[in-house]
Image (cartoon, rainbow, N blue to C red; front, side, top):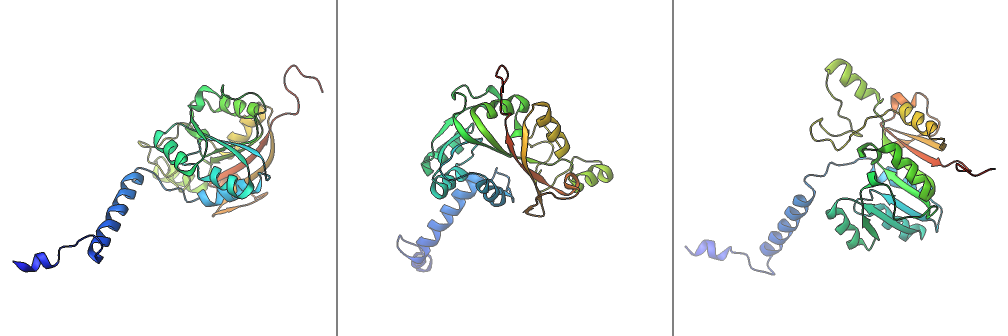
Length: 243
């Protein structure tokens, strides 16, 4: 009967330390179990940072836990602002000391006057919005340039799954089943280019993400890329202004 008592862990013992570590690990898993992994996060963050000059004013729409804004602030000395809908992610931003407001992008950006920012970031969010066209217009009202990352529904693996399997495709860039996806719209690179052209927005740079690398001027990009990063710029003049 004394054997179990001799093995009972107390605070400060090795057993107690293991129990606390296990509890912390379990807590982390509980917080993240419903979040789908994004294998391109580090890559897209790196590419986005390449196109944001030091000291810029940056707005991140759908900023999540504020990870990118924290890096931009610390590394590029940017003045940053986030917008996020999920209360849990807002708390994570606050923990990082990142300024954030809660907002639904589908209702526009009435909080910000024209030209409030130099750059706006919209990474893996556009396809989740009800009104992506309206949101793109709003983004380039409040910022001179936008960095937009979207998944590419024209990726060859998705095409094959749909053609031969007859099922909604699941890829690294589109990692959800049809019944739990947050994505409301599916577009190829061709589709995105068409929308941007209709809006009179200039594509400064198109960077297809192929096998974990951002490839400039890639051949057959709409077939080979899982996602793409676009650097967009609004027209030099607006309606009602002359050049």
